[in-house]
Length: 126
Image (cartoon, rainbow, N blue to C red; front, side, top):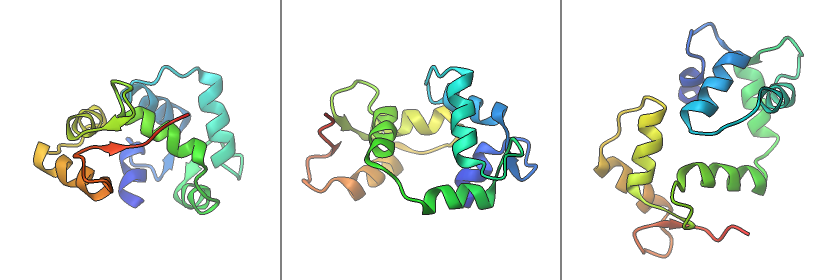
């Protein structure tokens, strides 16, 4: 989780700003409005200082991940919208956020979640 936080905290000041969160959404190809980013900041930044500290980041994850959160994350990776995530789609997202990841590494990630052994991470999203 620290690595994820540090990746979003682009200026390395120990907190995630509104601009850094907006950058993340844009890098992931999500066209979100400033108001939506502000709502995420308010939900995560419980001390209301306008930033998300690492403690707040962890607290947000401890509160639990909802099915809606999982669906949203899945859709970010499922670039062709077919309900499956392949290694190529994982690699595409990793590159968008500036992480180098070989196709072999991405295939291993997918295999870790490929419970039906089809070569894809699949989920029916309603």
